[in-house]
Length: 229
Image (cartoon, rainbow, N blue to C red; front, side, top):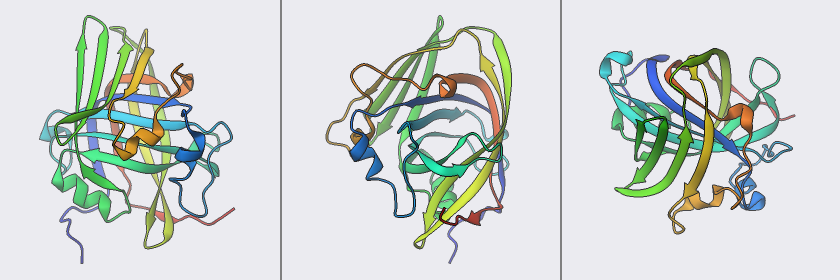
């Protein structure tokens, strides 16, 4: 029986969003988090999105919340542009029980957590906490202007009752100028997410490192079963 009262899809507008991508210190440990039927992308890249929705007025039904999700880019499956790799969720720390119930029904491994984004004098600090304990901290340099507008669709993959399910997530975001990812620290060695930590010398996937002061997107309602390739 469904525990969520929300109908799909759901719209979120003008979130504050920091997206990062990197090569992990332990590629084998990261790849082991993928289910049968999926393989890591050739470059072994990981992804992470840390974002905040400040007001219920920015959503069609979720309400205000904060979120950090992450996982692996995968091989042989792509977003609708045919270039951007499909991405599998391994961790999903959300502050809202409403959102957690909605996404769990769609195979997302949602658990409680809180994310803050603090921007002061061009220095952005994003902190992800689980049970009040900081587990991830990202620091970036951010300009005050909008450099470009990004638009398109991402494809995220989940596992529902031993089936792989994909969904396309449309987005439109203002990308800040002068962005530079300065550091990415996984702070809790005893937390399972530590398996995704970067190398000590951070190897960034530059095309997927950015900050958007305003990013709007849709949680999909048209998921489909992913067939093996």
